[in-house]
Image (cartoon, rainbow, N blue to C red; front, top):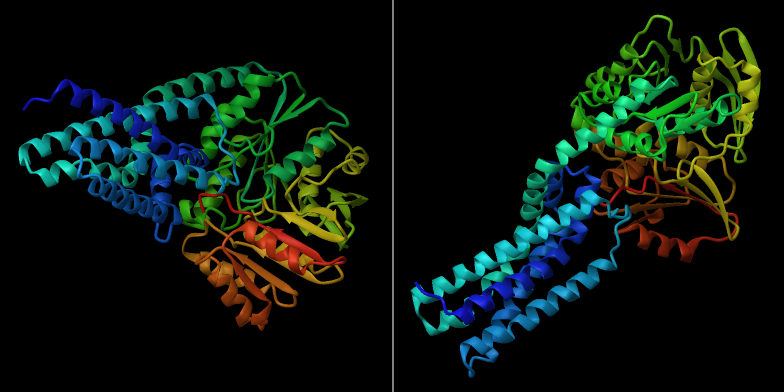
Length: 528
């Protein structure tokens, strides 16, 4: 079977154009893969989960491309079929360009970071898309020569319209292939950081837990900085690669290094402990967060308890079952007592061992007092007196997006958009009810709770009774919230369901007035 030189050139050119155009469609999905930590399995699970709008959009793109390409071939069939095939490229490229432009308007809430790894993955994905497009082009041409029917010649390249359906698989394939380079490269990066930790004379602290990790880390940083030179992992850098990046870039020229440790599966904390080798540890608390990946609360307790076993000196939250000789246990060795909650801040008595001191902070919510107590207990272990700790607490600033109070045009906004755990959600609603005026909550609900997710969302919805407005963001996931709210005596006319946070903000703009308070509870990443 022979192809003419012009046909070969045309197929290669068309394959390059098709691959490049399809790579534009992949941009949003590549961002989701980055949010999943470049893990192909959860990425594919997200792509093909029931009700995913992304999959529906790809199906719609495929159908519309097929119809447009076939229609243009049919309309220009009075010319030579080669000319009709060439003209059909226009709607193919034009419709994908339109799709790309519309996708850009749906910007990811968690922006894709153009890291070297992401760039390498995008290039690899483009290569495979061009390769697949060229292969499909030659297959279509070969089939048309074999069938040798005029009508088939006319529609032989309509198959290209099916390519959007396989884009998630191509991305996963590219990601798997690139791991042949990424894994050894990452190991070198981790090895460099591990060497820095091993050679450093600073005291290394690991902080983990189902909730409160970032807050306790930031509070401890502020308190300890009054006496020591302290470095903490930035933002929510709580993975081996994130911690290594912070250390390799900034070094360990400090007295104390605070490492936040996240875990989504069994073995994550051990991997982090092997990297940083913590001398001190804080386990903030344990709840059913990430139950979906861990399988049981017992497994979560065991995973968080790994840090308690590895560190020599440990601070344990009240909900932690791990035991450690000499550990400071919340509620026994230290506590935030006589907590007084107001709309302007929190007052409590800090107790460490037999010493007590009154404390006042602008932070909101019961968990603020409890997290400060955990940070204070760590500071006590590291050599600070209770008076020095109290002075450090006065300097603590609210952590952005964690029940952060913001005033805007007479409306009070409680930004708790980074909160996604059961206990924190209860505290946030409790805090909202402290405010005067009308009170509203905006939430998509709680995630990663496995089989008990619907139940926990129903319980959360029940807490919304008494509020003046309940704005639920999403489609199917918020139904348990609505059910729980109504079952607890909530009023149906106070519930509003919207498809996105943007729509929720548009709705609020029409109903809010000076003196109102609105709680933004858990702004889920795009992968949900």
